[in-house]
Length: 100
Image 1 (cartoon, one colour):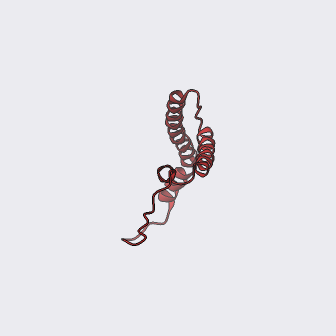
Image 2 (tube, helix red, strand yellow):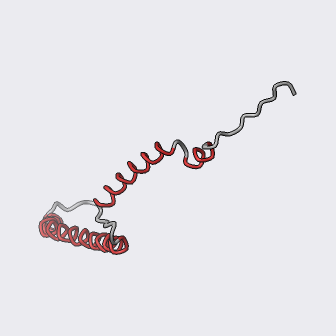
Image 3 (tube, one colour):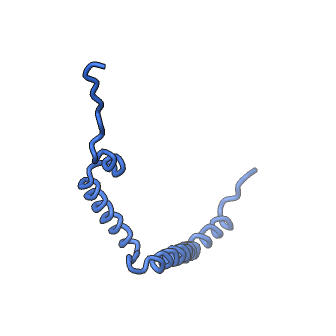
């Protein structure tokens, strides 16, 4: 065994492997990602001090939004139907007869 030298792992290799990189780089990435996720969560109404209430309010708003969308769609349907249905009915009544 001439000059058999084993590469011993450095003392911090296990830490680097566990973290996925150097501790400073990993900390910077985690801070940046936390800020970005925080901005997104704040945009949809989450509050970090009362997260359970925020989640409940999010689902309540989504539920209300769903019914508001149905209400909005129904109102536009009725508004259009006031014009479209009578015109369609008149065109069917007074239109040229179609041969079969």
